[in-house]
Image (tube, one colour):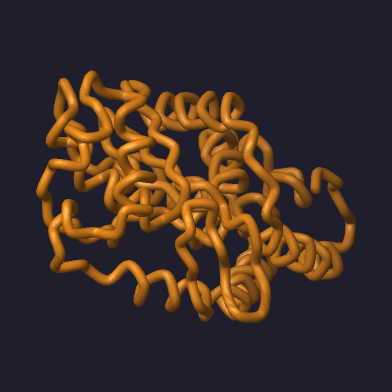
Length: 248
């Protein structure tokens, strides 16, 4: 998706088609590359890179890992940095790139509306499925406890049994970032990759690459949690490797 064009309107239509097609793919991520992009994006935002990058099998596993990990970690996760990492830089880059043109602003709006139309049902399903759970972690099904313990024990000295004995309540994950569905991502990628506004978007280059290659993430100062994409997406929903099924 790196071709500069003289016809922005036609390019925007093609870009949206490619983008929405990409959102339905289930390719496994290149984890070392994604982890380097996490560090690069934090650095570009003026943040030290996180001490831990925790991969999770699904958004549900990620949400529970975020609840459990602080209880067994050797250091605090730190505050959420999604504003500093994602929203602030994207707003500044968009303002710089669109400062002098109305046509591109209109095309970017159309791209954002196109992604929203293609993903709204999935976003709503995710939001509903990840509504706060009142059951403590030890009362969760064995498959979710095992998936969370498998993620968390890689970053602590605790055994899986000790991790599963933790008894937190489910935390709200309203600050989760939805990868390539994140508002602004398609517009800035279009401006950078198809229109050639490289200097104006240089500050968010690693962030855009990270969002394009990440299904969902939660960013704290010292910990970044990343969810793997589904292994299957069909008309009924999305299916994850840990057994979680998201009906859409």
